[in-house]
Image (cartoon, rainbow, N blue to C red):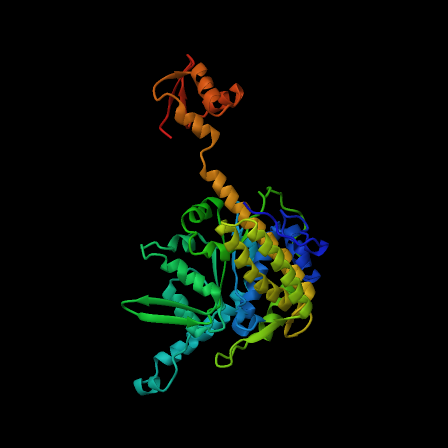
Length: 442
């Protein structure tokens, strides 16, 4: 359905449209990713997705991108890795998120201590004391009510991480409430205001929501969602990493050098400290595009507009491209902050030309991935040739010759292929006389 988008300029060419463009990361980050791959066999794509989620979470509401007057983009992203079970999807992301978990544990210990002190206060003392709340950088599976409460207590924002996102996707419209759950997350992504209204709780709002999504899911599970929940554009907002089938590899003898963990912790903690404070009354600091970065984006936008206009009526294509034009600023902000935090606590104020080029390259990778995922889901949802052949076979007993004839008249495959299909015991019952019956109806 889709095609890779690229300006006719070498800086916009992907390293390989089927692989994650690691060149967008600084050398120090590339070294960490490569070391994890070489020693722990962590897929570079999965590690990279974890890094994007971790750094964008550290930014939170402290920074937003001002593209132009009235067009302000938040930092958070919806990052989803799609791969079959047994692909070791979770371990790389968990490794990258370890600094966030450590900080969470520290805050939780403090919260428990403060809560215990609060509970023993007398009634009049409680009335004059603010009840402690849990500071968090990352939460797991949560209802809308929990998201709103947590955001009220953590206005800078946080990451919603789930090892398996099947539950998140499966929760949308689970109770027949129109598209309320999906719409809520679309509003979260937009970053202006998200609300939840119930009879019991009334109207609850999040102003300037900043909640990132990070997790994994299997192709068959996300395929079901794509085919049934695409009307309001949530799918268009998600950045999917959908790598080619990963080969099984034996563990190398050399283990990961401890210095790699120290390097990552130092980079993450340095960035987290730099963007730790967020004043709700003052709002986010606004990061602008340099004039050269703005020109790069505008040139890319013109190519996108031409592609959209050449495919009039393809609302899926248009929706994905326009949402990914929004995502490019989130990616650019994350990459710029990552560069600024490598050696010192340098706060950024501008998106550079090179960073915009890198952000476009990475956005095009994600664009190609969502089209590839949609294409695969579409192909798998159609009946295979074997299914068509099977459906046309007689419902009572039939011979090999009859099976050949059905294949010739319908799917036009070789007799050798039919012989293979006839040995499929899940579908066909055979006997020594060359007679067959169906196991069940397709």
